Length: 161
Image 1 (cartoon, helix red, strand yellow):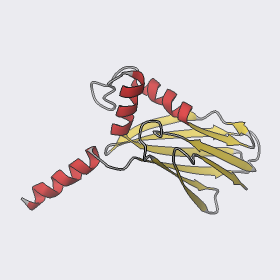
Image 2 (image 1 turned 135 degrees about the horizontal axis):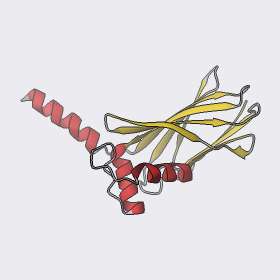
Image 3 (image 1 turned 180 degrees about the vertical axis):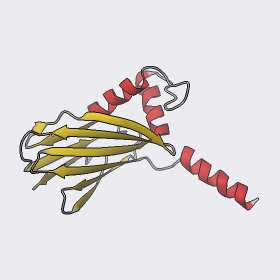
Image 4 (image 1 turned 90 degrees about the horizontal axis):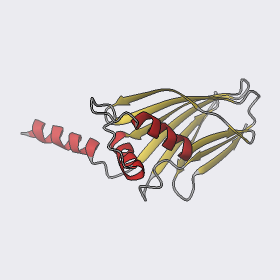
């Protein structure tokens, strides 16, 4: 009975999480002008976004996945998340998207074509749907990590190197 209860509570914790969080890990090579990042978003939160914004039941990662799901996800992420280097908005190319344990991971890269001296991250993911949304951003410049917690009112980070 204890095992059943433990499994059930863990299952409910995955499906019905009370906190809405994304986690972005960003690695910056300032000298080469390159940025690699991953964004982790809970799949059920993305389902809510696609349904409410685009009227699509996406069923991401299942055999019944809507044919437009990935395109709509990329459209949403590109609208609500951006990175600028030295004042110029970077074109972020999605390398891959994977789903692991109820979360979707977007792996992206961007090139500044010059040495990066200043970076700006604007992360408004899910803040248009969840009032208590927190977007954690961890930036590594090759020497140390810088951590930030963003929300609907505070969604921009500026960092100089």
